[in-house]
View 1 (cartoon, rainbow, N blue to C red):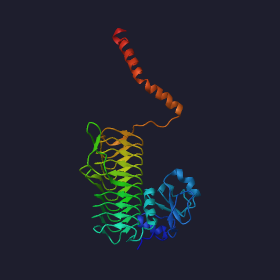
View 2: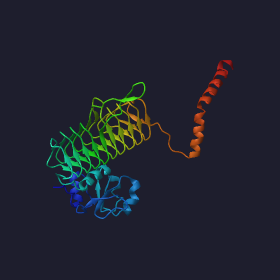
View 3: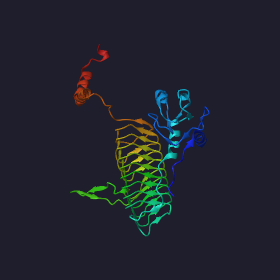
View 4: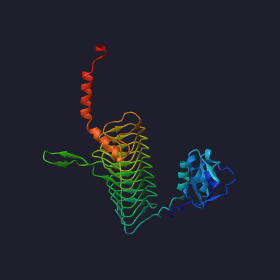
Amino acid sequence: MASQPEAALTLAALAQRFDLECPRGTGDTPISGVCALTPGRAGCIAFAEGAANSQALAESAAAAVIVPESLVDASVLPVLVADQPRLAFARVAALFERDRPRPGIHPASVVDASADVHAEAHIGPHAVIGAGSTVEAGVVIGANTVVGAGCRIGAQSTIASNCSIDDNVRLGERVSVEPNAVIGARGFGLVHNGGGWEAIPQMGGVEIGDDVEIGAGTTIDRGALEDTRIAPGVKIDNQVHIGHNCVIGAHTVIAGCTGIAGSCTIGANCMIGGGVGIGDHVSITDGVIITAASQVPKNIEDSGVYSSTFRAMPAGTWRKRLALFRQLDRLEQRLRRVERDAPSSGDQ
């Protein structure tokens, strides 16, 4: 049977389920879904976090709202009180996610006779499951997705349509892979032979831990000899590239369009902004935040926030500063001459 979203729940039931406070005697308010605070939607619950939401609270059409203690009096709507409203909202929203497909193997799919597909898994149309692969209970494989030989797809994982999971890739439990992701492609390993380039065989695999999320169009290359490894709890946005032999530590988040070159090691609980470039063989310690569009050519050994970009400015101002930048060598030489020729304090 397909899993069903929750039917309408009451505020009191949500409060009990997620250890929230439900004041004002509004516990019987029915909730059948979630919505944004503005414009809101009848029967649904939203959330608000700070004083900037006060006006929106007054105008929202939501049935109820999750707020911090500081906003209880600002809301004319029934409320649930949470220390972290956004987190509480995420947990409530998960109750109303879309149905998972019914278990079964679509007749238009291709499953190798040696593959082990659990009876509670769903294999979509034109999907391919390779020789010796294991697909565990509750897994969903979308249409046109190819799972190669010797793979393991852990329980309750979801691989969306048009993905490529190459040979010897192992996904943990509750992994989410969005459309058009490619996991396990040949790494960019080359050696120069004096006249051109020869490919180095990439004989490793990819190991993905539990509760990892991989965004649409993201690519993770297999290792050369050892595996590329993504630790549990890592969240990877759309169109990220992770090169061969990389190791990404637990609960690190990586925003879209970031490129991580081969053989990098990134610690646990890091936050990497969008459009970041990380050079090959770079090591980054735990707890590092790298702001968007930064370039990281060398190791980062101390936790903290790192940036290497200019903020946007009016084009005319940028052109003036660029012209000055091009003169830095000449200005440095001039300054050195001035310092050399200036009389010392003892000469005055």
